Structure formats: C-alpha cells, structure tokens
Length: 157
Length: 157
Image 1: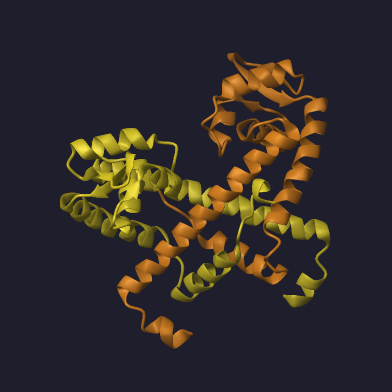
Image 2 (image 1 turned 30 degrees about the vertical axis):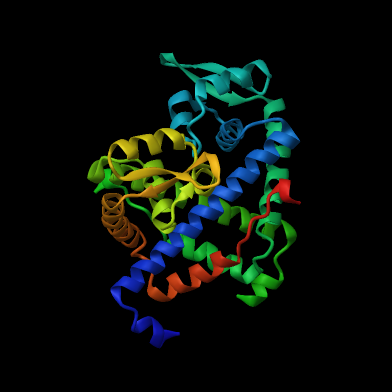
C-alpha cells in the first residue's frame, strides 16, 4: 500500500478526504435516524429529551440552564420546554442557586436517574448491535483514528 | 493488542461501540457546522441548496422532484422552495416529462453547472484541510473501516 500512497496526487488525496466525510455523514445520519425511531417506539421519547437527561446524569450536582444548553449535542429542541416537561413528569427538579437570585440549577430526581440509567443501557445495546459488523480490533482502530480528528472552526482561527 | 481484545467482556465491547458512535456524532456535527458557516460566508448559500445542486450535478439528465427529495442527505429544507429560488436565479430549469403530464424534471442550466463545479472544488478543499491531520495511510484505513459500516433500520427488518 505505501507505494500507492506515496504516489497519490493532491487531487486524489483530497478525494480520499471527501470520501471520508461523505461516509461519516451518511453513517451518522442513518444511526441518528435509527436512534430517534427506537426512542420513539420503545420509550415514547425524543432524542433532545434523551440528551438532556444524559447531560444531567453525568453532572450529579446538576447544571445551570445555560450550561445545559451549551452541553447538548442536539440543541435544536428548546431546552426550556424540555426541562418543563421533565419537571412535570417528576424526572427533574429546579433548585435555586445560592448567591445568584436569578439562576436555577436543574437536577435529576431519583426517579429520573433510575429511568435514564435503564434507557441508557438499552440505548447502548442498540448502538452495539448497529455496529456489530466491526470486529473488536477494527473497533479499536476506528476509535483511535477518530480520536485524531479534531475539527477547528472558522470562528476560532 | 490482541490479548487485550480477546479478554474484552461484553460490557467493554459495547462501551467501545458507544465510543465510536459518540465520536462519529461529534465529528460529523462539527464538520457540518463548519461547512454551513463557510458556505454562508464564502458563497452566501446554504447547505440544503448546495445539496440540491450536488444531486442535480450528478444526474446530467435531471431528476423528478420526488427523486430529488429522496436523494437528499439534508432534507429538512423544503425542496420545492429551494428549487424555485434556483430557477429564479437561473441555475436550474424545470422541464415537462413526456408521457407524464403532472411530473416535471429539474435540470441544471449551464450557468448552474459551472457555478456548482466551482463551489464543489472549494468545498472539497475545505474538507481536505479539516481532515489534514490524517496521514494518507490513516485515511485509507478509515475509508475501508467506514465502508464496512452498514446501518440497517428498524423499519427494514
């Protein structure tokens, strides 16, 4: 392979990167669609709601609304509306922040923590089955390669 | 590595697949955000519009509106509205389908073909620079690994 690689012209190198991008885009869109569908069918829930619960599950002490919005990978849903529904479903509480009158911290309730732990376990098994064509060794290589990819934005340069 | 791999328990295997998913999701979201921003700044255009032009560029004979909607990877934009703007900008024409009174085929004009060819070249260079931390050999391995990943949906099983 290395001879072929060394003789790659610039154009072919760019095309190979474009191939990577088109495949990444296709796979992530398909997986996301699949996860949305399964969340809907099996848990009657949505991806933005799942993501809010996931963020709160990771932060045991709770999060300010602003931090919660910033942390979400799926941010199109309106976080305020989602949190309000979670409060009325008893999965989340809002508590005042000492020293900051206007801020509220959002936390999972015990019920919320329990429900999310169950959903997360099932969610993990969906991902594992979607990616079960990868051998353990391939999976390790893929994690390492993807770890190298750090995208810098226009605005940060 | 192979000894470590052979002793992976089921839980650790699932976690490794979850890691892959979280990295795929993060990278594709970051790249997509970057591409949207650059299309806006450098070409005053949008990703759905770029995707419509890309689909039409690949199909020299043009596409029915229904096929165009189905082909788009980014389908949230409303295709009808996008096509109407492209027609009034002179990049696209709608022509009747012989034998089907109600159907129309959408085609790029010469101007549309030329403009898209230019944008596509620049777009490819953005992708190449975003992924320039990958060596040629890593890029080849990544393309092969991603080719193995075929996601099957709930509805097709």
